[in-house]
Length: 132
Image (tube, rainbow, N blue to C red; front, side, top):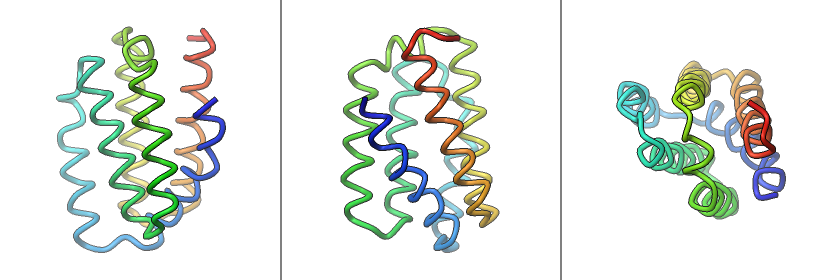
């Protein structure tokens, strides 16, 4: 439920981040991408998802987006994150989706950033609904 409510906000945040990113933002995202493969436990991946959501929300420049994304990612992942990332293949797919989203924002491509955020949300919906 949380993901469905926050999906449009997260997509708009990704678009805004791609459009508004500065050099410091790009550096932060590149550092995040460089550490993605280190997040190979459910707990580490949950923390990385929350960190990424905060980075994107901050880059959006919209405090309401920050609030909604904080609720969506921290509350939602704390609630079901261990189940969500229990499978190693899911963790690998989640890391690949993080990489794709970050690269779209780094490249300044708002259309791909929206698409990547949407794909992530749909995948989380499927996983939480029991689909693989």
